Length: 330
Image (tube, rainbow, N blue to C red):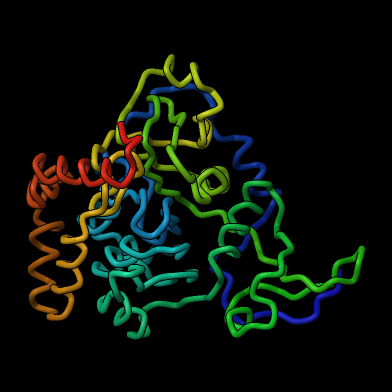
């Protein structure tokens, strides 16, 4: 295949298909109980320097509990896949936890506005970054999930984003058509929040799974947080509903309201007041430091954080709000 030109961005996670195949061949695929705690999962699977990717989309179905614990444990020099990474990037930027990032969409929190702390962190020179589109990062996951070193696509061609990426422009050997070859991305760890799973890690997701099925199969290790742990017998009644199979998963933790302040389809709406509070506190560095200490660093776990944010009463309000939006909410 003829290579025409290449983007000038750095490839943070070079991919070797044969090495990857060997890794997954050796990975334990037995149905074993993988229940653990958020603290232990972060300690075991996310040492300093780990490249991580977070499932969900923006403020939807993200694993907030694990992200908070990364801050509590003071993890540093992480790599981050910025596939519509909004509140997750905001949390990690607050702790200056990552020093390199594959960017598709970060800093912005959709209609809520821009994160000043995230923006300042990227502008500080402390973070190396390479640009992509959301589609390109999704297809990079898919390539790794397929066990191939790249996939051809047409995204980014002719754009400045391509110039800042690590993609290559190539000619199709069959038709001569120009494509962008996007390299496979196999994160060290994927962090994914789901609606339900069993103790083995068979996961069910209500609604759109975004790229999480590919992300789970692409990543060397997968940490799952779930709204509920259900019996394996219940999983087997609807095998077609299993989005992520157990053989992908390394750790399983039950974390009710685990996406808060983000939303969870059919479970609870996002807490827009809390998102607004984040953005308000970011305007003053000292106030923001106090805010992060109070809500994350000085809390023992995610349960304490939820209590500070209104506890059961507030969570019930958000369930009611979701019911208004989605009458099929359980």
